Image: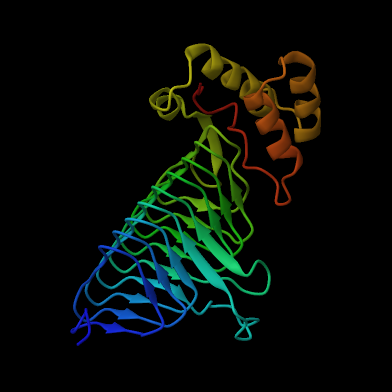
Length: 266
């Protein structure tokens, strides 16, 4: 008799210790589920899924489904979900295509209800996506990013670490690390000081990040001249170098600086 008599678990799926698979869920072949996971009722884990430890998948979620990409030709690809990540109701996550062969979601993430993560995305650790966030293919979102509810992220966009994106945003351009982003079109709205303090950044380090972004976004310079000025005036550090490298390597361009007619942000 099956260990999960009311669930549809493929005999070749690899199930770890202390895993709970609720009734009417489906686990396909070529799936690995780590120790301590909880798979809620009426959810489906498709081929290529690799779940870490203590992952929670709530009812109606679909993990590692076939990509919604017309170029997908049935190639063998995967979806990696890190330890302790929570996937709430009706989240959909597509596996990779021939581009990267995998979709990756880090550890300790929270994907709230109705989030969609498309093929070939890479999501860092400790990220939070509020309800109904829609992430297109090939997107990179780095550690500790928070994306507000009902936001839409354009394909190939990159979002830096410790970013806070306002709910309902249309993210068409790259969002540099440590920033807050809001408005339409998406605009720099200051440094995410609250988030940085919560994560142990000192006041001195936050001031350094603010000084860097004052040059980049508040002096009316183009990106090239702003980066040259940052490199001349801001003492090199891990944070400064991360910001500079992020902007230099941006392929889509970065979000706007705010208008001088707007209120001042820090």
